[in-house]
Length: 351
Ligand code: SAH
Image (cartoon, rainbow, N blue to C red; front, side):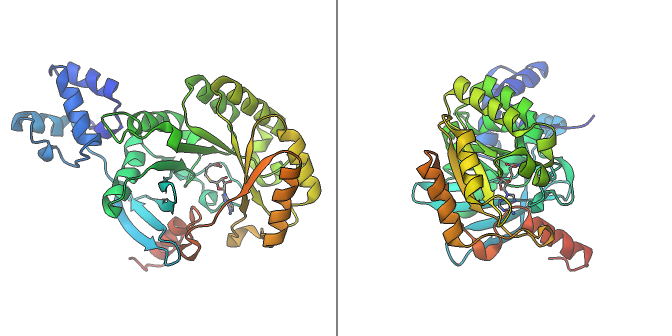
């Protein structure tokens, strides 16, 4: 019989399986606290369980962990980039960032991505598989243990499309925010999506307190469809309609990501069109100078052009900021370290 990934079980699920095993009710809570409160990685460490119960658990379950394969620390701002190796040898990335208000961890939700955005390094080789809730949790637990810092916020903006891995991401959020675990308020979690409309609607129904970021990157279908294939499934108007409904249902304002690409989406007309489409949504626009990825051919404009774009939006009544870039010396943009590592492996240059 295949063993169960115990760290991906919510407390409710753990209660069900332990009841099936004939264990008393309180055991589930006890085991859950060992996994997500004390964050042990073996059953042997669960010292208040009898030896026979520990071996019973060992037979039925396994405890999933990730290990640090590479770690890069920025000399400029102390940003730490982790390359994690998963149980099956696949790798993903996470980035630990320091802000005045605390420490944030950007995590991956899939090995690769199948959304195919033209400017993004994470999707070039497609999607290998979804991450489990336990792997996403362990991205956080491992960064915390390694850095000795408490992670105050989590951003789901690493490799992968979180809403394409909906069920595991929901479990991850439930466990992450549970009082027996890290007890991290979902108000300190941002989830970024390229715009899967059906899942945005489903997420709205859950009424979570998290911040939804939508990667818009264009003011109209013509430009958006060129770089984001998802736009051919759900166009800009369908996406914005789902965003307006999301805001109405949850009361949570949406943040729109807009990567400025020179000559593609950064003209004053683009700013005006964007502002008119976002009007009245209470939206926030986060401008990102596009990170050049060799294969894309996209370039960023100069700083003055980016500031002009922001000012234009502000004049038209749309709240906009330019994202501060952290860890620029360690290629902290997502997907790049994983790709470098894979290329090194292919060339036989391991380690
Ligand atoms: N799949 C999710 C989250 C992962 S990417 C999403 O699409 O939102 C996190 C953010 O970085 C997204 O806004 C994405 O569009 C953006 N991004 C990807 N590649 C980029 C690049 N080369 N330069 C700037 N932003 C990029």
